[in-house]
Length: 562
Image (cartoon, rainbow, N blue to C red):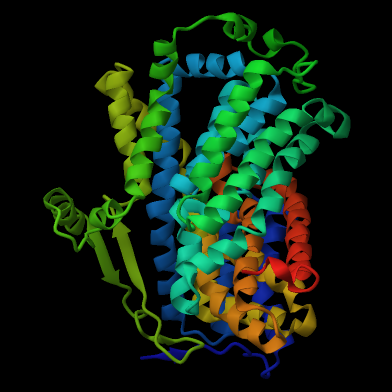
């Protein structure tokens, strides 16, 4: 039995309906920032509130509401939960095998300065992982690395979430941009060009902003040359690759250029003073072996061997995202290559697409068409499986026993049980919000801003990423609405679509999924409220910058539109 979404369920009044749609979102903020609930409890109760609003106010049949939640819960487990489990597992392996001591020393050989370590690991290395994998792996891995270097766990998670702003729009080999082409009819290359004329301003600013957050203006000026090398090299590469190569490679190329440029620069330049956090009176006070490690000389082979788990992770994730390997891993390859054909057969066996009972094609959306709903499970094609393979190879490289290998995996699973529960419940909440029409109601309200719409267009993307946890999902959710509204108000559609994606990147740091993943990676399950309070103000400030950039590009800077 079909059900048609109603976007103005309260007396056909859009404003009142929007206030109702905001209830689960406002509740979630209240639960975490004011009530300070543990993350998994905030997730569970927010899901219950969303279900109540969907059924009692939006008139969604209870069975369909519950099934949409189940669809989101499954997606929260795989691929998202699977990525965080394997990422933390791989990191723990390097710690237990003693290889992380050498990794820490290799970073210290470049710099002992916390500011520069944040640029290398959180900004550049995190951006590379975002470009190759996305879906939480960048924050999980880079935050864990910073904690291993001696950063405060909460601070490491916050820094990595903010640093992740720069690459999100082109993450997972350009999927957020590519996804918009289908529903909007605007070529991905054109959207890529426009995003590449917005985000580089933010990308050049983020390294400076990170250090300002960490140390203030005066200590930031001490490392301004390194900040400029890191940010400007990233921004220029991001602009060139997005405008002349397409949406697939900007993150990977920009991150590599930024990483190598800063590493080489630090061979010839050092800050006058070494910055450490106030809690670190001396390096030895926090970690007795810290000073000794900084002076320990390891051979190039030892350093390569220690970094090999993360090099393998990078290799496997990159392969998993390549065409035509990516479709073969999911059983969708249509070429003639024998090897890929064999992988494709395995991929078919390990890929499951099951119709969600009582939901598939039983909800009529805003376009008058039924909405497909599947439990989609890709066991081989998931990025988490690529990370697991890197961990399996690492077992042999690090000479870990089967007992230690298995024990480390079980340990990671136990630690992540509650964070994974939170992730699954907040993704379920997102699916209920979308299926009931609440997300569309909020989007329609913002679209009523008329001549000010160019300023508010990025807010739609920000809201979409907060709700769904994904720039890709936000682009699919609001892409068509952005295009239609832009045409009504005389705005270039490609600018509106780019604004949706660029605004979305600023919402990633407050997305419940991202918060849960970051806390899980650094062992702070249950302290999600603290991390949200840390990132919220930065998210709003960076969103304001994107809003101003978009507004100016619609007027005085319209020559920037391709």
